[in-house]
Image (cartoon, rainbow, N blue to C red; front, top):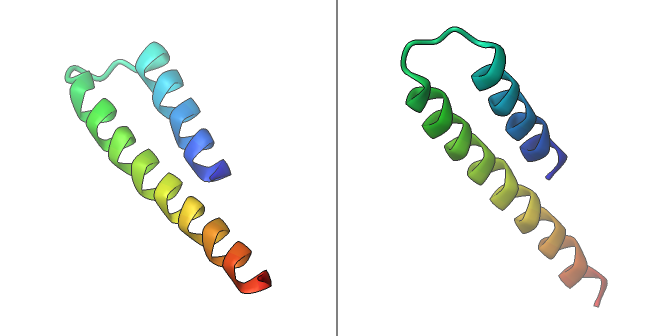
Length: 53
């Protein structure tokens, strides 16, 4: 889940300081990467809690 936060920070900083002509590519790619890493992190946390029961 920390990786999702790092990617979100990178997307925001890139959109502010970057000189990319089409910023929507950064937003879409960043959003998909954040979604993927966040879901994976939440799935791993859920999996560990069920094993302890």
